Amino acid sequence: MNKHIRTLHTAEQIVDEGFARPEERAALEAVAAQYAVALPPALAELIDRSDANDPIARQFVPQAAELDRRNDELLDPIGDDAHSPVEGIVHRYPDRVLLKLTHVCAVYCRFCFRREMVGPGKPNALSREALAGALDYIRSHKDIWEVILTGGDPLILSPRRLRETMQALGAIDHVKIVRIHTRVPIADPKRITPELVRAMKIKGKATYVALHVNHARELSADARTAIDRMADAGMPLLAQTVLLKGVNDTAQTLSALMRALVECRIKPYYLHHGDLAPGTSHLRTDIATGQTIMREMRGTVSGLCQPTYVLDIPNGHGKSPIGPGYLEQEGEGYSVEDFTGQRHAYSG
Image (cartoon, rainbow, N blue to C red):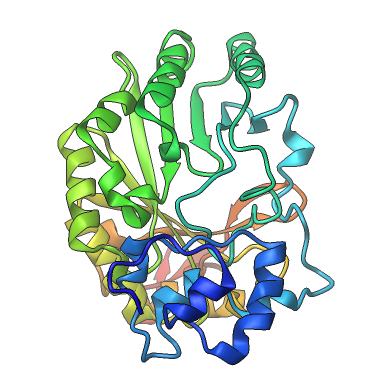
């Protein structure tokens, strides 16, 4: 095994570096033929090869279980296509749009809801003509207050390309917020250079960065340096987490992650229930598990550490909060549950 490994893209490389057994190679080749694979050094170095249930490997190393597709799984599980008026734009909610600049990621998560749309064989990035059309759409819709850069991963782009897009958005008066969704600070933290950070900011607008982090071990020393660089530049940082079986589906593991995020100046934002992406059932929990975890965390960890547990309703109907309920109507008043599980009458 090579101590200083490169980004791994094939089943052969995954096996040769000790992240899978030789007898798994044929199945993993079938997975890699269907879904993109990229395991970068920054994440590979965090994996304990001796642990068959390592939570980092479970997220990023392909598994034969991905070949098992359930009947209820969907090619476009959150319905992006139904809300895409022009190439590169998803306009699901009135005041915000997604701008999908690229279909390339630094790492390909094995549970990705866009796994049918990203990776090799797909267009690497929006063409100049498509980007111009997307920006024209944003200019012509005055109700768009926020633009969310996603993909793929927008921080894969060069500082020059990112700066051009940010400056174009900055010139649109009714756009006040740009939010960047990324895994790069975790997957390839050395890409977060001072030049890239400068490119992320727009004078007179607010840039928010939403990092995708699922386990506290992902917050390596290099990742924390990249995060500090963005936070020190004055950009508010948020975190999105996916609830994953065998990765973070206990209150103890999830609490440790949320505390680590807050210590890094990152506010936990959403805890996503796993989407119905093809070949991902082995990583999905049930909703009851998520609600139990959220209930256990309530009151035992700081309010700063509490994300909103959400489900992206299939076929493009948007996100809804699905956390546990604490309030019930009782006669002319209410019964409310405290963090210990005790119930109290409230007449207001």
